[in-house]
Image (cartoon, rainbow, N blue to C red; front, side, top):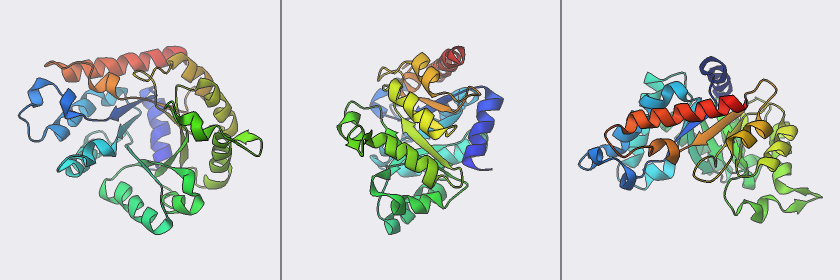
Amino acid sequence: MTFTQKLRNRWQQADTLVCVGLDPDPAKFPDAFVDDEDALFSFCRDIADATAEFACAFKPQIAYFAARNDGEAALQRLIAHINAVHPDVPVILDAKRGDIGSTAEQYATEAFDRFGADAVTLNPYMGRDSAAPFLQRSDRGCIFLCHTSNPGARDFQERLVDGAPLYQHIAHTIANDWNADGNCALVVGATFPEELKVIRGLVGDMPLLIPGVGAQGGDVEAVVKNGKTVDGTGLMINSSRGILYASSGAGYAEAAADAARDLRDAINRSR
């Protein structure tokens, strides 16, 4: 089953648009993990197990693992655990790769073969040849940065090129030229709802990964209104800190599940 099929099945069968971001910062872990040498894996495993029923996808951020000794091994184990225990929930490796073709081939092997992810986030700045090794894996998802959620997004992404903002050229090119196998998606920040509306109009029913809800101030109702497809899906609305660190006490996993459920319900009310 392809990433896109897996995601669409999850939208329909689990009735959720919540993407659970796994950005583990040991400094924020509950006290129970202070002496746990395997804390990175154990904490994320517990969060994934607790929130899986409310998730349309999981999104581990590779930097939070790669920055620590044995962190990448923990990431491998985590994705293997999700694939084994929650096989219906796709895993997006948030790596934002983008490099020359020969290097991109290695990054594609890393994301899809080494880590076993269903999809990976990518930077389209270097053009089609840098994306080709990922696009060729037609069963896997390629999620390209388009209009991101950070304040500096306007620095380049809204620069006019031939009369239109650069982000619109990115959306149009990926939707019309790069998506021949239907395995593309875009990253669009919740903090820019009007731009989200424009992008949805340009790309049809292409899936959109939406960071920026919660700690960054994105509004759920505005995201759903401007970003959903005709059938009320089309979105992976990500929350990381708001779910991961819902509690620092003994009930951290239950609190994470409650936070994921609350976000799912808030989204569904807006749908």
